[in-house]
Length: 207
Image 1: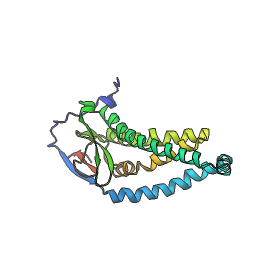
Image 2 (image 1 turned 180 degrees about the vertical axis):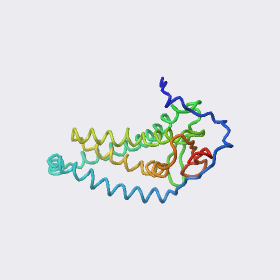
Image 3 (image 1 turned 90 degrees about the horizontal axis):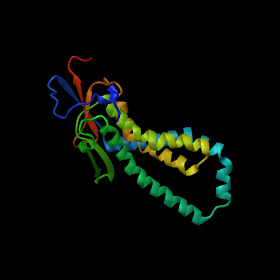
Image 4 (image 1 turned 45 degrees about the vertical axis):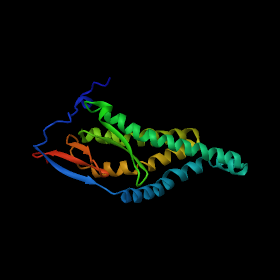
């Protein structure tokens, strides 16, 4: 069990927030979509091109000895891993946030925004900004950045492109971290109940 003060400094859902000023931070699905495509273009240039150049011989061999069965098998596995990864992405959010709240996983809600076919993880109680950011960034690290580093070291093409996908899939997470960049890390934050985004609770005397 984690015992550090960083973890134990949690907040009870019934805390009195009378001395805190509230600030709304929300964004639209469209904003996330725009960021998604921009990030995809940036990562293709910054990561995919170097990876292809480093392992060009492997790519050349694959397409020189192309077989439809192998290609369809790879595509099927890729889609399957993406589906599993999407579930893991939200689960990692929830499990990370659960470490920082009193009632653990019982205050974590999972669901799907059916209008946009977007899964989500919602923490129903307040978190400190630093804890909220930790839970927000963790899926991108676990499913995206670390697999990419491993793929660069080993030349595993499927792992590389899966990692690339899950970095891009974290566009909304990166956006909210960017929007929180100037907030005091010891302020409190709570997921918005009905919109993408959150509500910041900052102590009134805190600059």
